[in-house]
Length: 235
Image (cartoon, rainbow, N blue to C red):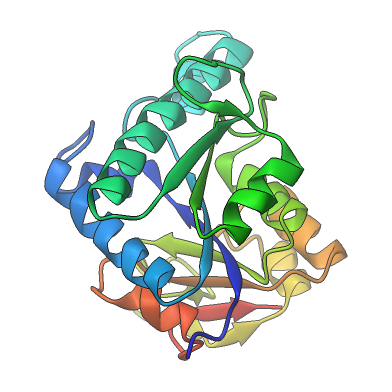
């Protein structure tokens, strides 16, 4: 029996690239979609936010003298490409899916309207929230938190390339210690870069729990939805 009735799942754009250095790996997209489909079939209402870093990263472009606002808007459009690919993969698996974008583009997706999004979820449709918040300087972490709060999700689930939150970067420091549970304030005070500070602060102010877990382990999305103790819980 799933622990959560409604979740907001955040998946990075890089996860969709699989072994490729950029772009979309069809096999990886299909595999992730099958895991999300399994959760949806178990009765969990699933909202998704996908990053766009596999196609375009606005911050990196700004570092190369591109205007930051232009770069961020290009990154938002990249998330729409990922959302359409993921929608197609989910629907091939029989999961009705809607893409809702914060930047209006009627020919390819619905505009984001909060009440309509909630109605889609209530009808058993997966909803992919694309184009971030439509505002520059805000990451997809912040967009995921905002959408999670708006649709009354019970948890923000951030699927990453590491198996939780550590007191320092485990890729650089072999003695890094993993937290099973950690408070918002400690994440912010120590600058643990698991999620944007603005997203963590928003969750703290609204008492929204966050779970951070390893996406590379097959079945972890379902384990998270079932409430199994994987990764790290921030509360």
